[in-house]
Length: 377
Image (tube, rainbow, N blue to C red; front, side, top):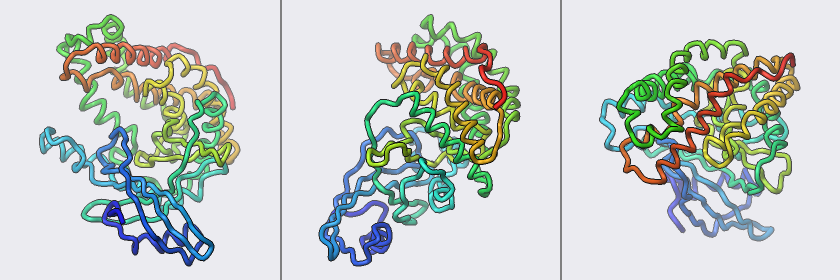
């Protein structure tokens, strides 16, 4: 048999496979572990592995497929060229166990019909400061997302936030994902770079589409404390933190159901916060045009308000919209230009990427000049 991820053995896994499948007589004949190629977006993800299990019981063959997600302290996944004091600080600001804690909490039982997490089959501690989550391998459709998908997901996310409001508060550095983002990603990184004249001499930053953003970004940087204050117009609720379409699988066998992955950014957040990655996520990733966002945002906010109300929490849609725009202005414009690539070779691909990013940033900035389209609930 192929060695299993995270030091897990078949003996560790078998009781939970029996529980998950409801087959107490299940035995395992063979397993195959195949690394899943993925873009590394978090230093706390050590590896993703698809594990195919050939099992059987008295009724015959039982094929199973799982995904093993190995979590680790951030310091283990940071590039070695980062100076040790900086590595230690970054490590202190990333709560690497959050995803494991969410999967082993009551969150799954709190989610509304039409929204669920992958089933947690087994959790393996160690070796060292690591945890391996053995999760259901969820299939998904490759059908393009539609406005109806966005509205349905926004409603489900609203219902989930309201249902989870009795859960214990998640402990996050700086008290929330956004608080941490403002203190570190903005305050310690992006804003100093954007304020430096040298940044704007780079060929990618000198492009007219990019350079023309400098005055607006400087003005936005000065407004960050006010934008944080704007978020107080809505109540704080538990949030997933990164509910992009890429993290919302749509299983072909479960029409109308979303399976929400990657809970490592779970956080207390202003109501409506999960609408932001849902609506902006594809344009941020460059997989959809930026101009789809404004109309989708209006529709998603209205649907999210309906979801909150369905669980007994009335939040006026115009306030949700204000908070969502404030959160988007904090989260995207100052960090979406290719600041991470200023030391890389200048290529046509980098220049084209900078222009595409500039279009996304301009769209987000323009939202602050767009009147809130919704009032009341």
